[in-house]
Image 1: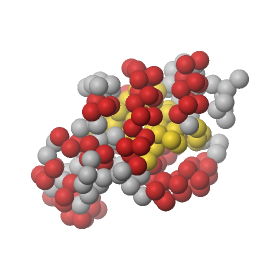
Image 2: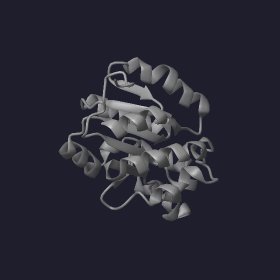
Image 3: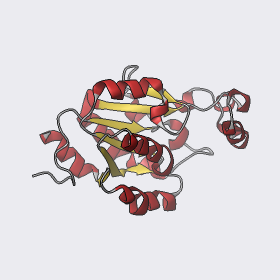
Image 4: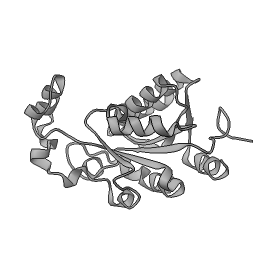
Length: 202
């Protein structure tokens, strides 16, 4: 008997690790200390799912002029994280997760929503997963944006609560306590232990 609200995962599920990059896991303006605490859970999920785990990276603009629309204002405010300042290495996945990623399962994006990456979107469309399992950072930004796009596209969506974090803990908790539960017929919330058990029997 499955412990998930809507039954077993199915044999064609995918895990999606969102933006677990050095940019967020090392000291700096976008440092999210709580992300370090979820790193072991993220690593276990990635190790368990193997080739069925995808990774995303948030690629910042080179500078504000490299952006368009309101993103120009955004990068004027956050000029310290533009590539002209931080370089490319800070955008790499954390070393503990880099070992699981390669050019076929790691997708770069320039917005909060991973589905805005045509490569990611096409991969998901072609794979047609029975479920999409999301974890990573930030719960209230890129995880939320990507999960809601997946909902709109009709996919089964599962969020792993103890493998998500944010630089704003109150906002993280609000997502888990109020926002995700608003989509109770479309977003399932579970923990990594339960998810790993379900994955092994699916």
